[in-house]
Length: 125
Image (cartoon, rainbow, N blue to C red; front, top):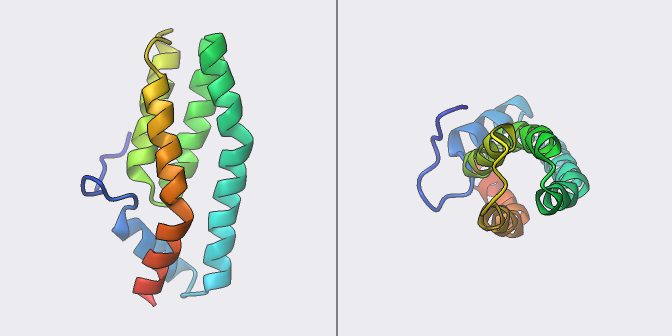
């Protein structure tokens, strides 16, 4: 797992966002596509992950959490990725009790995602 460089209560790793901005040469359409792709993947896989937690399907919890962890790191969501890492480890260890608070924290992160993504990219322009 990568060490988080995100200050407490910050949603994004600002260094990662600056790197993405540089890679995209400031092209906001491209950056919006990155965000849209992440949101689509999250919307497709997170409900399935929640269902696997309810069903206590350890293997699928581990696999889905791993996928969403990597996707979260790719858009600078280090703390969200760390939450997915905790779920991944829980699946690996066959531990499914008390995972709902982690799922709730991830959902709270996603409610902030679009607004803060746009605000951070505007800062970089």
